[in-house]
Image (cartoon, rainbow, N blue to C red; front, side, top):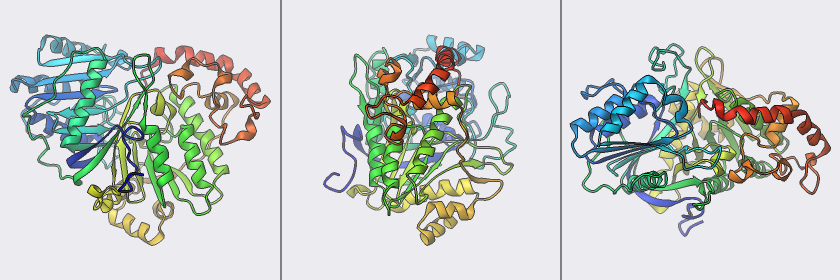
Length: 522
């Protein structure tokens, strides 16, 4: 803890702490795309778009009357034509680009950008083997920045209503996709400039020329957005993987562990995955306490893609099963949201709220690769800091708003019931039902191969080193949670060895083909 009681400590669980003149949480991509477009319209000097994916073909706001084209690629080209001196830098992960770059519209747009001196496009290959650049940051004139979980790409757009029949929820070729829940933040002030420094540093390390910071930029906060916070300190936490030419940063891992340890009563999180051994171990310690806090995690029913359900869903099942053994008071619950018609809503948001004190939004999930292998960026507001002391009600309101969205009710109802019960779990259990609601997660039965893959973290390694370690040298996923499955020296028990032998052929096949089919959603 710092002198004022805050848990944020640069160099340990955050990179920097900077002041934000205004900040807000934006839920779902309909609101995000509108806000980002409105902010970009105001840009005078520089726009930095750094992400896991970027698709020039998607609709980008477009419902307002700002005079610009609807599609994001055309919008960027229009924006620089109307604004002399404006430069746009687009940096996206190289491996994830393999699929989308070969769309005809995308190739034509990139060809136009290559000839445009105001638009600069790079693929980011600066990551370990099997790693990815997973940050999702947009910075406009060093004045306004967006940081969270939403990429400017296909299959992300949805409204907070998550209706079953939504004609606008389609891919560029008209193919419909399912309901999608996501979140990001918008920040103005010194914290936005810090995120600009982060993006410029990432551009340079990817091989690009140095980019100058902005001076005399625009006031880019969108007119239609009311801030949640004013004049607050914002922590910025990173994951930077270990590589030969860079020092690793594991601030997000430390932040998660510290958040869990600090929780007094209520830990609420939304995450695409629940597969991190370190996060699970930290939760397990708290569940063993007789009067410890409760933990609620909202997540999708299943990971998307052809391979991720094998890796992430299996690891989740194993961890939850192990944690249930440590949870005699039933203080851990996992839920998934559904539409009114009973369709699962895919949870891509990465949000954590502890008690009424700390809010964290970012790109990182509760999985191993987010803590050690991929590049990630999260922002955090701690109400214990002197500058943020009056923000507890705002933080609680953001959590209650998310619960109200999932349970199809009003924030006031959530607030009153949490006040009455002192429990998120009881609040959810009283309000959930059929249709638009949250449904509890049930641990599925796992076959031997999936158990082996999950226990050995084949597809979710804890950092670059594990990609090349012998299986016997890896720390198994459940070693600390279920030590009776392993020998005292840490080697695999006969049972696990038998599972390994049975699954090794399948595992090798999966590893050998996973990158050739890497067009999955993350």
